[in-house]
Amino acid sequence: MFKTILFDCDGVLVDSENISACALSLTLEGFGVTLAKDQIASQLVGKLRSGVDSILQCHLDASEMDRFWSSYYETREQMFDAELEPVEGARLCLEQLSQRGVLLGVVTQAARSKAIRNLARVQLLEYFEDAVYSADQVERPKPWPDLYRHALHDLGALPSGALTVDDREEGILGGLRAGLSTVFFNGVHGRPCDFSWVRTVRNLSEISA
Image 1 (cartoon, rainbow, N blue to C red):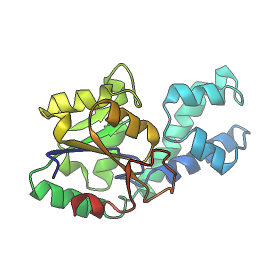
Image 2 (cartoon, rainbow, N blue to C red; image 1 turned 90 degrees about the vertical axis):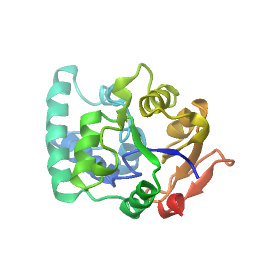
Image 3 (cartoon, rainbow, N blue to C red; image 1 turned 135 degrees about the horizontal axis):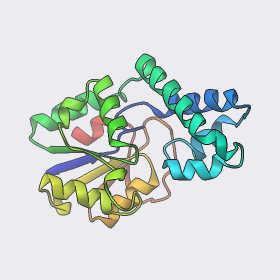
């Protein structure tokens, strides 16, 4: 039994990535750009804005970037309000862990404000209180260990008793580099994990079992 568990947010606790991909696709179409859905999902969704900008610069003029992002955020938030759901099994998993006294936290590449809004939308924020940590709070994002170390320090927890759950390899790498145990969650998108020694689960109930 781990004393502390740190969850990624998008694609692990909230089923947001397909919505984000649709919002990106719609916004790009509004700017006259059509990209394949698999390209949007693999290259744009879940990435830091700086990385997305470097790709979009091939399709949009620099003068359009601010207007693009403003339009995208507005479209995405409207879609989140209408469609966002928790990942299946997330609420039960968090409830069971909370009842056992496990320290719970969120470690996300996304802006902290976005993670808090989305967790609140699906009634999961109560399980974390202020323990929502974002890459914008540290110098280096995943796959660097900075975010995990920051979260553990704030929680007063040790890596030896901590687990992180992520659906992307950069999260697994970041957790390993910080000395945490890791679990690869493959319950939403079916992404492969090249780290064969890392445990894979398809339902969050396996975490709290």
